[in-house]
Each structure stands twice: as C-alpha cells, then as structure tokens.
Amino acid sequence: MSIKSLRSWLRLLNENKELAVVDKEVSTKFEMAGYTKLYDGEKPVFFPKIEGYDGCAVAGIASTREQFAKAIGCDKHEMTDRFLDAMDHPLPPKQLSSEEAPVHQNVIKNDIDLLKMFPIPIHQEKDSGHYISAGLAIVRDPETGSQNVSIHRLQVSGKNKLGALILPRHTYNFFKKMEEIGKPLEIAIVIGVDPILMLSSQAIAPLGQDEIEIAGALKKSPIPVVPCKTVDIDVPAFAEIVLEGRILPKVREPEGPFGEFPAYYGPKSDKEVIEIHCVTHRDNPIYQTCLAGSDENLLLGAIPREASLLRSLKNTSPGVSKVYLTNGGKGRFHLVVSMKKRNEGEAKNVILAAFAGHYDIKQVIVVDEEIDIFDMDQVEWCVATRFQAERDLVVINHALGSKLDPSTDNGVSSKLGFDCTIPLKADPFEYEVTRIPGIENYSKDRIENTLPKKLSEAYLNND
Image (cartoon, rainbow, N blue to C red; front, side, top):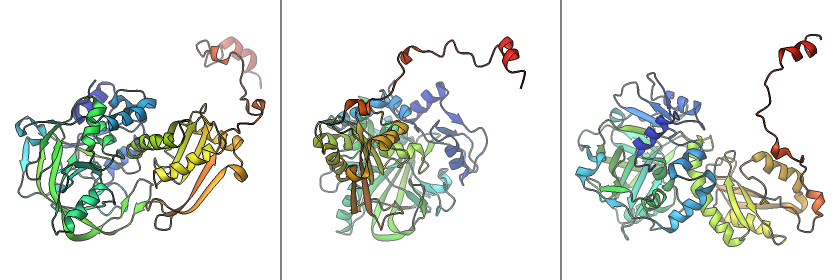
C-alpha cells in the first residue's frame, strides 16, 4: 500500500498488531523515552495519554530494517538499490493549496509556547531540557532557491525559542550566507511524517537536490506540499505539525548536553538560535519523537549512508556488491563490505575508499561475496580464520572522524581496515567450508519438544 502520511503508516501497523500502545498516562520526563527503549528494535510506541496534555505522541515509527522496507514496499536487501534509484530519478512534489493541506487546519501566530502546546520529552538523565528530535528542518538556499531537508537536535530554550546543533553541511552553509549579510535564514521544522520522509531527509545528496523529491521517488508518487504561512518554504501537506521561524544571525546561546546516538552525551556549548513565530498543525496532532541511539535513530543514519557508500565503492571496485553499517558501530562507525575479489590488493583499495567515502567510518571489514554481511557471527568468523594482521591490516592515524566519538581527539581519529578475503592463490581445500550432506532436506516438522511418556519412564525415571 502507498504510505501517504504518518497516520496511514500507523494505521497499517495497528491493523497488523505491530504497534505498542501504552495504556496509561505517561510523563514527558523520561517515561516516554523509557517505553520507547523498552520496545526498541521491535515496535513503534504510541502514547494516547500524556500527563498535562490533551494530545498524543508516537516514537520509534520504524525501528527495524524490515519496517523501513515495508514502508518503501521492498525487501530489506533491496533498500539500498531502491534508495540509489530514487536519488537518480527524483520526483518533484505536488503543490496543494492551504485549504487542501491538513497541516493548515490550525494556524497560531500569537502567544506561542511550545512546551504548553506539544508533549516534547526529556529523554536522557542529563539532557539539558526538552528536545525536538524528529523534526525535519527545511531551509532554502538564498542564492538558488533550492530546498534542503535535514534533522537537527533542537533544545527548547524559551517559549518560542530553540537551540540548534547545526553541523557544517548544507543547512549550515545556507545560514552562513545569510549571516554574513546580517540577515536570518528562514526555516520550517516539520514534525509528524512517515518513515520514507524521515529516511529521505538523511540522504547524502548533492547540494541543490531536495530530499522531498527523493521521498517522492521512493513512494513512486509526488509528495503533496503546501507553502508555509509566514516563510518561503514548501512543507509536506499531510504532516502533523510545522514550526515556522528564522535562524537568527550573530546570536549564539548555550545548548546541551544531550544524549547522542553513540550513547554518550554531546557537550554543552554555544549554538545557533531559532525563533519560532508561527505554528500550524492538524486537528488532534500526533507529536512524533525519536530516541537518540535507538534502532530507529541508527537506521535513519545507516540506510542512506549505505546507499552512497555502495555507489562510491563500486566506482573503486566493481566487485563490491553489498555494504552494512553495523548496529554495534552505531550505524556510522563500523562498515562491512561484501565483494568478489579479482586482484590481490583490491580489498585494501576498497578499505581506503570507504574511509574517504564518509569521515565517520573508523573500521572497515571486507569479506568475500558468499558471506552474509548482516550476520555478525559469519563476519567475526572471517576475521578469526581469514585475517592475519601482518598482511591484512590497514591502519591510518590522525584522520578526520566524528566529534561525537569520545575516543577521538576532537574528531581526529585512528582508523582500521581488515582484509578478510581469501587469497586468490590459496589451495581451495584450505578454505573449503564444512557441511553436512543433505542438511537442506532436514525439517523440524517431525520433531517433538518432549519425550513421550513411555520413553520418559524408560530413560529418565532412574538417576
């Protein structure tokens, strides 16, 4: 089925009994995050009763690869190819009028108090306050007019004020263009969208490509959008909530700490400030949140990165077939690559290309194509039996890594590559995998879980 909105996605999950509904009143302080963690990697969690609020909330709207694949309408192993195809064939959105857009059912321009309006949670013990963690930040390039979509951590630091961690990527570049001439950058923060829009927002797309067009291609249907009420930005018309505002020039205020995806706290520092001057929302809006470090959070980062990495690694070696950013590596730091090696040394070139492909990556394991890279037992078996550090280890010191990795020196990192491919000149018998003949024909259908009474009496009654 086509996923039109967050509501249609939740309806599908509910019909399939894949939605955890917390049938008790919960607090925005830790409780929402606690139940989200309880079902992490299993089910989205719906909160119909929230202390101090009439509205409801949802978290972890897709927290497995299978759930993201279901939203897209493909097998989980096909997602990378589907994502690349969507990036190559973007589909422009469809413009709706304000009257046609559910997100404009309510428009508030006065007395905005975000914490009174929406159940914005406090997630982790030492977070500095309430954080919007699943808001799509949409801005427009002041020179070209093209839009960009991204996600940033947003601390509620006043009634209508947000502190924002804006890393030096597209949004930051647009803001700096405006700040240099002393003007604010208009921004719309969209809350309450389906998994495809969330996933598309994390695409490693070239400057000028609107991620909403990638989402349209993934859905095979243009995303309906509507112009904002007070800023020159088009937003998904079927979203739940939109916060319209401006990133203020020459203003920095304290933001953080905040529990980030590596399961450590991002520190407190002076950050950019967003001032909200208009809020629009659907009737009975569903507030959407994402727990940092949850499987949803990790997969949102991993799946789009895997698509971009697969493309760049294939340019280095056409034998590369699959890539996997592991959950243990927080969907960012550890990469496993499957390839058909044709020349000695080729796997090491792939390792170097992976490090160049994204600065977050600090460990790469390359295995032969018959290995299931999503099965970490198989991957570890390759490290154990096909790897010797003397000839197969690649070490790079003093390279740029992630500043959110606390083991780095302010982001400067050491990186490791493991060539676990079989040497081309090896005796085939030396690496022949053991097997039991006919094992594929065995079945559990005729296997009992307990001994029949007669056999139990015969064998088990006497110690």
